[in-house]
Image 1 (cartoon, rainbow, N blue to C red):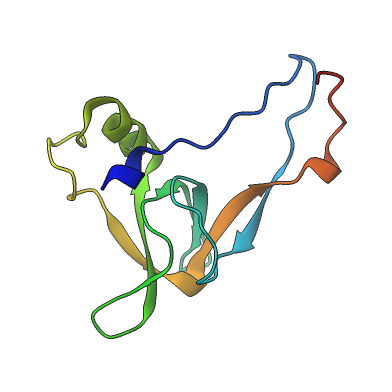
Image 2 (cartoon, rainbow, N blue to C red):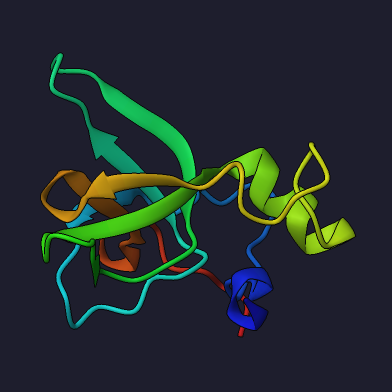
Length: 117
């Protein structure tokens, strides 16, 4: 559970710079993305957004690859207080099939170069 509160590194940019785009990429079993923003492709052709990964790809009890996620607000609440909004550390975790989960990757190549070093 110690790795659940690891925060991704932040990039410092001038206030007038455009942020780099976040382009969803499918997760795979060799990818490390705990704490990263993810989106989930739902069967109804919609996207579940504003989620954070609390696991990398793992196998469920039937051996299927899954990813454990929490809503982004709950992620930060856990980081700040040590528990989710209901006082637990497990109740807000959702399990989704790995083939439906995409990690939001920052792509610097598509954004203006920063003048800060």
